[in-house]
Image 1 (cartoon, rainbow, N blue to C red):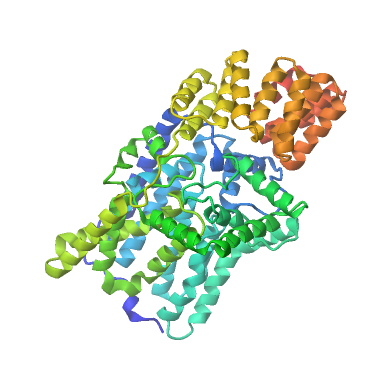
Image 2: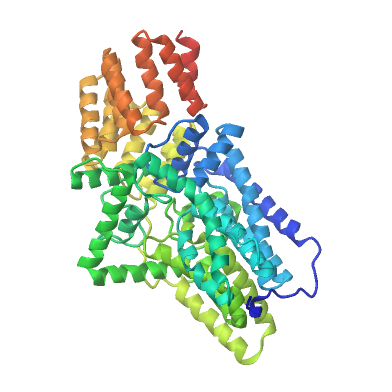
Length: 635
């Protein structure tokens, strides 16, 4: 029997065409954002960090090449869908973003449907329109990141859940939607783990049968991923194995609740990934599968809790505050730097007394929860999601991207709060206003004394984008703005690459040597110096630099490829082939290693094999111009 208290409200007055209107506004705003960013954002055509990881994985999917022969490091659904788009429309940065704009717009419509069921049609409309223009949702819908897809799957799951609750059937459908959300980001499993509480409270009899159907729906998308992981790794990995390293990042003696990189790891996704792998293998003295690396780092994080429980608890409280505070903790690139590139960036502020948009959203949402407390049973699955999803990150690491799935539900509660402020009088209004005002001051002031963000990394990212899109002059200008404020080894490595692209080889060498002096333990520093020396023809010195880089990072694909290039220049084709093949063992989808292996085969007299490798290179990366040129000129 259903609990009658949770029946949806009846609408006294239906609005004409609200759903298409909400979706249309969301679509127009997002398409406009994508088209603007295409012209203003230097990283639009040069993705970095997680976006680069997704891009490279998707290119491998489109080319039919295995990305990594192990259990998935990250949940696979978004890269697989991105790879499908590359397969259908070609590898490019615009079409996927336009598709994501449509997905994000659909999410606005889904929030309208949720609001109509939980509150009323007008509240659903206002919440949907608020979501259509919420700056961070719009921004991340335009990035090659999974957040937009995750939000839509979660919202679809709630629409279907509320519909199933009303009809008391089709329980497998919301489970299916949440299962898809789980293979987009596994943290959704935290919410699913508490759903038995809701089923038990909502239904007096037969709740377990409904729950069983729901769980069956959840398992339909997850089971193929689990099976695939076991087949390739012979380890049980339900979805992905990155949980252990993420737990260590957020729970170690040097953690500050802001940095999303393990101590001693490099800032690039490949550097961080292989540093985690190499350090775990060095500690245990053998090569490890992903699941074993996961357990190693989880153990290190738990060891921190055992040895320093007081410090660990303080760090947990700091993360909890940052999770609910108005400050946007950026894990991909500094959102306060990136806001200069898009028109809604004006709605993202980091003032001493006001941090938009979250610093206004959460106080209004808390007031809304107070005003709607009599409908608490109806909102119970929403509250369970807000709490479970939050805990799943606070225990690990926090960031703006990670709390985006909360935003639509907070928008709904904020709309309820704003409307009730116009209706309520007396004590009800005073309490609601008190909650909002107290929360505003609590979440907008810098209570935890956040340090200033090192902007050099943002300037590096922008300069890298300019360099990779053929604008080295602009890249150098951008980078030196950052270097005027701060200096890092990676910035000097980038400066060396930019100067080399401009033909200023003497200055390039100075920058590379500066990187080696500043960060001699960074393989990228030695790689940069090696490339400069190779360009000057000093092959012995260049080879020594690349060997030093590989001593520091044996999994460096760039290092093995560069060492192969030195062997190729010397005419040692067998040695070059061995180095390139080692690079491809580490990263089968490396276009550079495939291309240079083709050169080694060509100069060894294996022309047919060389052409085959260059065609594979172009299948993997159609924009790899050197492979096109080789096919045209080297017959």
